[in-house]
Image (cartoon, rainbow over all chains, first blue to last red; front, side):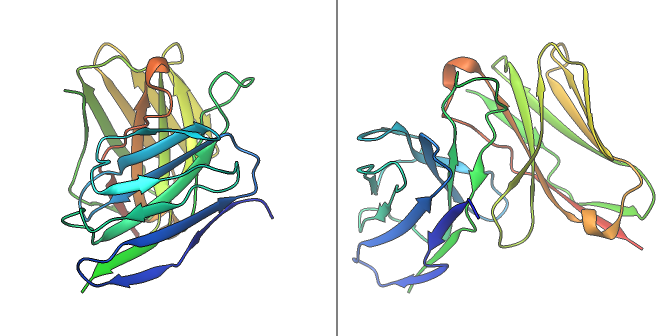
Length: 117
Length: 113
């Protein structure tokens, strides 16, 4: 079945360590996104990519890095520079704007919960 | 700055009644507005999109309205069921900010039998 796969589902990190969250999609979508969700807060955009080898910072990019070497993959690295990384991370994808009539619907993965020990 | 407001208090409703959720936005003029459902520990799932030139959109027991004058969208779940219990998120979108989708914090709906 087509969809978005995030891994790992749960991740524990010691302070000072970098960790990488995986996001793979087989929906043939051009655009991919990373969001962070904290309790009682809306989803906040970290990075997004509308095409391979290109990505833009979202609202809270500091302390995070991404790459988009393949259409299917958009990994997120949480670096030691991120001061408060404990959160629920969501990856999403969509077709690019203007590609026919579309709703701009985002397809989300099941999320990765990162806890800093 | 752009702001999206959804009622942070949970909406407790009896099965069979209509649940009405509000999404207010300020400091921008979205051309579209999406609604998503999120279950605990899961990713959001798209429900509906309404465009600025559409006053109302329906999908099964769901109805969404979009009032660009009031800068507000209302989301209705009619004949609510316990399975409708979830958090509902709104996401107003402008065409020039495509890709930078912003979401409200969501309103939790609890439907009791």
